[in-house]
Structure formats: C-alpha cells, structure tokens
Image (tube, rainbow, N blue to C red; front, side, top):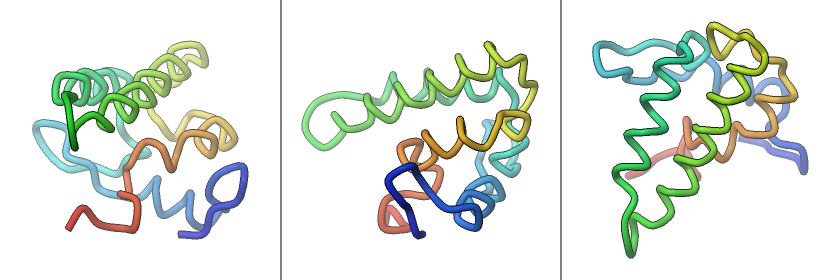
Length: 104
C-alpha cells in the first residue's frame, strides 16, 4: 500500500474500503460498515487492549472510536458516506489492512 504524509493514495484507499470486515454476523466491505458496527468494533478492540503486545490495540481502538464520532458528526450511515479526507487521515491507523499487509 502506498501511503503519503496524508495517508493512502486514492487506489490504496479504494482497496481499504473494499476490504472484507467481519461484523459479528457476516463479512462485508469496510465501506458498508454502519455506525453501530464501527462503534461495536471500537468497543471490541478497547476490551482486547492490555499490556505487552496487546497494548497497541488501545490506540487502534481509539481510532475506531474517532471514526464512529466522525460518522456521527457527519450523519454518515455507513463508512462510505464519509468524505475521503476524513477516511484518508484515519485509514492506516484503523488496521483494516494490517501494517505490512498481514497479521501472519
């Protein structure tokens, strides 16, 4: 993924938006996640944060919470309804696509 100082370029952002995310019931593109699903992901990650290697999860959870807040402020029903600059500024830090492309 190519990323500049402001976040991923348009092609990389499109790939992130198309990435399949498990929402607790099924997989769907990140772009189609609802506010409730984004809030649930933030809470799930916050609950998983701890010490040692899992400490980083807290910062990822905070970015998901910020995404939910941006959706609420912008009255966005889905992630796709947010403006691209809002998404671009958070995309890499959400770990929709893990750093390096894989958790493995």
